Length: 255
Image 1 (cartoon, one colour):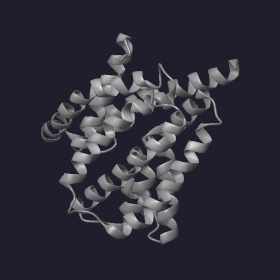
Image 2: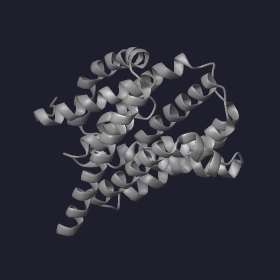
Image 3: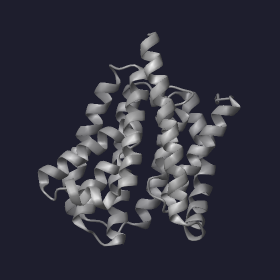
Image 4: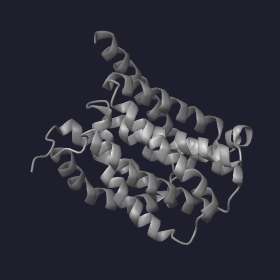
């Protein structure tokens, strides 16, 4: 069994796993930094494939914790759309270059940062819809962006925040929706050949840290001012996205 050996890879991967753990601990959205960060030095889909098994383990734990707090109607509307989005992303990813994926991740992540700066609740109020068609559309967009860039949060929130759910019901619905999507995302990643022995071995090596960082996330939520934490994270995301855009455009230009 072989592992990645580049020290820079592990510096970025551990930072990404830390972000995922903090996100699961309560700072929703922080985990968005993981895939763009690792995509700076390796093919973006390969980076996403390394994080996916880790996220699934985290999801199983979270789904058990929130197994009684969820909205069945929203899940019944959005999950079929999410699965369609995953299928579309898998098809597209098979026909585009790494440079194009980097550009997509960069643009999507910049949109994510702008979304947070404007305000999720405000966006949901302005363009959200409570209709079945609206839920299916936003679910599909969430599945698509989640597969390509691990950035399915904003489309999901645009629909769900407009429903004004109780806090625990909202958290449980988020957990079950993305836990379900992450499980089904293994299909296109497998078909695209992104689950390599080296990548999977690296995922397993990072898994104990991911579990520990989950508990660190719970602790940080209690002691860290939320506004400061999100401000730092979003600035980092914005800078990383600009670099992904630059490298993606350069790759396409040279290709």
